[in-house]
Length: 123
Figure 1 (cartoon, rainbow, N blue to C red):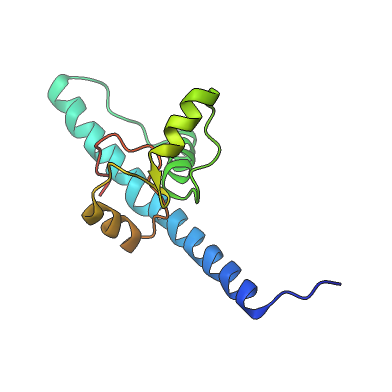
Figure 2 (cartoon, rainbow, N blue to C red):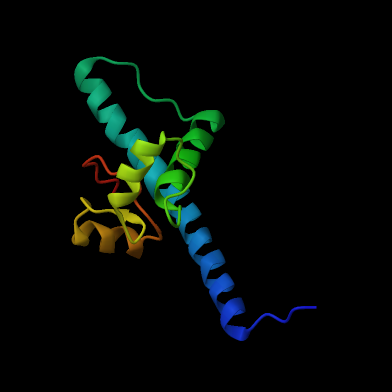
């Protein structure tokens, strides 16, 4: 039987805690903010409003977890060339184009990463 070191156990607890914080971020901050911002635009352009069904909510949370709770930004489906380009653009779980101020804000609310940055501030 292999003994786990105290350091290993402490790291696992931290990751679990951070994962829960990130899940809470997705449920309580990200998803409601997406609905709010989208509906604001939809009202101006006479588009139908974004729904808040359980299925829609779970899809938004899954997207959020892939983007903001993904240590190492793994699990994206790319060709080899696209994957190499994507990995070059990642620095410490965040794309290089994310400003340090936004990284600090995201970390303070529980996000672990921002893998697919497109100029959007989710806060």
